[in-house]
Length: 79
Image (tube, rainbow, N blue to C red; front, side, top):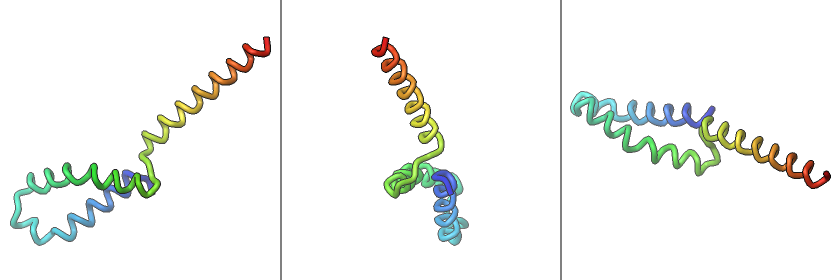
């Protein structure tokens, strides 16, 4: 399960548990609450060792670029 799926699952649990309040509170209030707590949930998930797919792919690209630079530098020092 990736971070986004985990975030959605936690948000769905919160929605389910606040279901009784849903009838009493305006829907835009619940959406605002989700926008407020989502970053905190994502930070908590990252602290548990998970990262988002986009962050993983960005780090992977960075590692590949650095590896290419190292190979180029090594080949230049051999010449």
